[in-house]
Length: 199
Image 1 (spheres, helix red, strand yellow):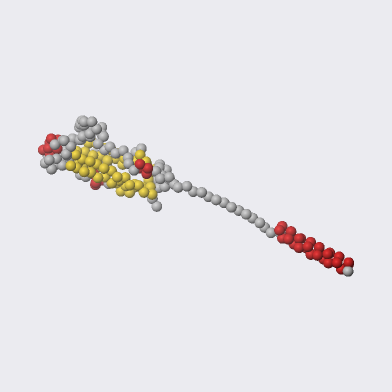
Image 2: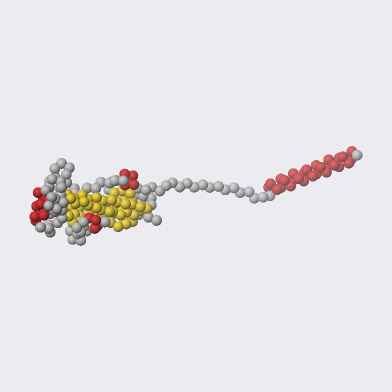
């Protein structure tokens, strides 16, 4: 009986050793690999300047078409008023820079309002994108700038608008406008720059 009991204990130990050996050999006999990774992206910068103004933040820019120094006719305004007269000429430039981290395109829509004198005469303004030797149009609406692409990170261009009070009309119209100078006959020019991401 004692021998039988010892045989059982020996058999149980043998089975335990075999199971432990199988478990250990199973742990060391397989491949185990672990890998991980991550990535982060931030929002691309959206910044577009007209002159010194980032219109993506301020929604406005400096626009001063009647501050000029190249006219062949001397005029003098009072205080902050801008004045023009027959024969005056000028130009203004819009410097556009895409400081965004995406390609962008811009367009410019010009508008003007001309108030008439008491006799119904309006200032005979003309405008050109190419200057003295170029094509002149009788309203600034005719020289809008269509969608133009600028490269990201500093793509830039300059749009220059030339204007003049044309001499072609009858002298009495110019004289009538000058006699009614009290602010009724005037011209107001506006520019709207629209910018959007390309693609």
